[in-house]
Image 1 (cartoon, rainbow, N blue to C red):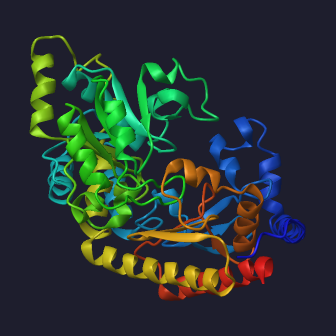
Image 2 (cartoon, one colour; image 1 turned 180 degrees about the horizontal axis):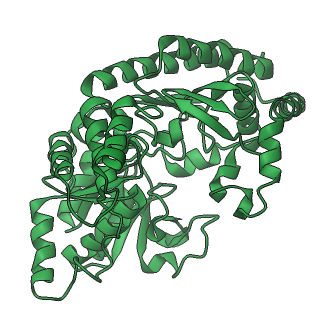
Length: 455
C-alpha cells in the first residue's frame, strides 16, 4: 500500500491552484468585490470551495452548471442533495411559474390543494400518516425535536458522533471521555453545554446506544439511516433494527432524518430497508430546489402531542415555537407536488442508482489499480470516496480520515477538468439528467488525477 508523497502532493496542488486562479478571473473579481457580504459570500459556508474563492454561478440546467467565466461543468455536487432532481427541472419550473405568475399568491398563510397531495405522496413513500411542512430540513428537525420532548416528557435527544442534521443546536455533539457528551469541534456558540440537551453515542455501536438510553431521559434517537456528511458510513447488519428495539425498550422515539439518504431509493432507506420510525424528516430535494422541508409523525406521537395541546399546556398553533410564517407556503407545496409527481419517480431512481453503481465501480477500479489506501461507498444514487481503507465504520473514524491537502487537490483537479464534486466532502450524486457519459468522464478524470499522485 503506497503512502502519500507529500512533496509530490504539494507540487500537484500548487499547479492545480495556479490553473484554477488563471481560469476564473471573473469569479475572483466578484469575490474580491463582495465587501458588503459577511465572508464575501451570501452564506459563509460558500467559502468551503477549494481555490481561495468560489466559482460564481451564471446559469444551470439539469446536471450542468456554467460559471461567470463561461466554463461549463458536469455537476455531481447537485447542491449537496438540494438539486437531486437536477437544476430547474421542467415540471417544477412550470409549476412554480404557474403559481407565481398565473395563479398568484406565493405565500398567503392559507393552505392549498397541493399540500394534501404532497402529504398523501409522502405517506405512500415513507409510511408516516401525518405531515407538516417547513422551509428546510433544519427547521423540520428542530420542530420535530420539540414535539418529541413534548410527547415523551423527556428532555434530551440521542445523536451519533459526527452526525449531521442541519444547524440544530442539540445535534453538534460527540461522545466525550467517561461517558460525557461534549460539543463537536468548531460548534458556534452553543447556548448551553451539550450534556444538558443531548446524549451522544457511536455509530454502529449498539452498546453505546443502550448505555445512553439507560439514563431514562432520552426523548428520541435522532439519526440518519447512514451517516452522510462525514463520508458515507453505512450501517452494519442489525444496527438499525437494534436502534428500533432499543428505542422501544427504553421508551424513546425513533426519529429518522432522510434529507441525504433519500438517495437510497424512491422511498428512501425507510422503505428500502423497512425501517419503522416514529418521526420522519426530509428536506432539500423534494422541492426541486425551492426551499422546503417536511416532518411526518405516527398516529401515536400525534395523540401524545394533542393530549398536551388540548389541555392548554402546549400551543402548536400560535406561540409554542413550532412553525414559521412562510412554512407550507403555496409556492413550496406546488414545487414539491411537481417534483415528486414528475421528476423524482421510481423510474428516475432506477436510472440514478444504476449510474451511481457504475461511478462507484470506476472509482474502485482506480483504487485497485494503484493500490490507493482509500475506500468508496455507495448509497443508492449517491457515491463517495474517503481517504481511508478499510471504509470507516463510525463518524469518529470517518472524521479521522479527513486530509485537507488531498481534499483540496482532488477538488481543484476535478474542477479544472470540468467536474464539480461536493465541496464539503467527496460526494457524487446522480440526478435524472446524469448520463453514462458523465460517469465515464469522471472515471477517466479520477484515474488521471489519482494516478498523478500515486503512480
